[in-house]
Amino acid sequence: MVSRLFAAAVLSWGLAASDMMATQVLLDRAGFSPGEIDGRGGRNTQAAIRAFEAANKTTIAEALAAASEPATIRYTITTEDASAPFVPSIPRT
Image (cartoon, rainbow, N blue to C red; front, side, top):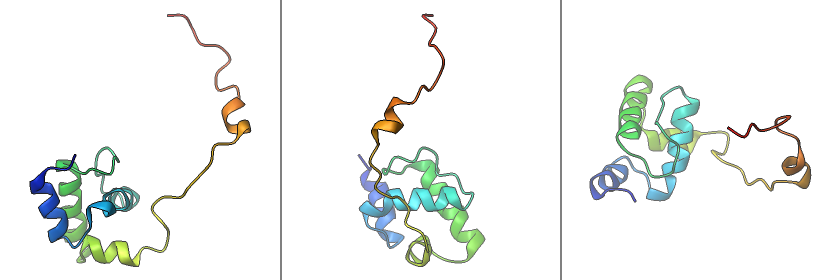
């Protein structure tokens, strides 16, 4: 759950709470680590937003609006994806 303080900060940046995942992905792609990409945000995301905005002289909301690629895509795992041998064997210990 996003804290009330952070939710207020998100709104002050011109973002809806639902934009948090896209914000974190955009920050990560731009080289400003938001920490764990979880759609909730937190101190690392706040720091990354401040650093991004200072470095790019734009708001994160404007950067999201101008992004040419979607932050996420819908993907359905296929049987082939799930059936591949990922490791030859898994040790017991």
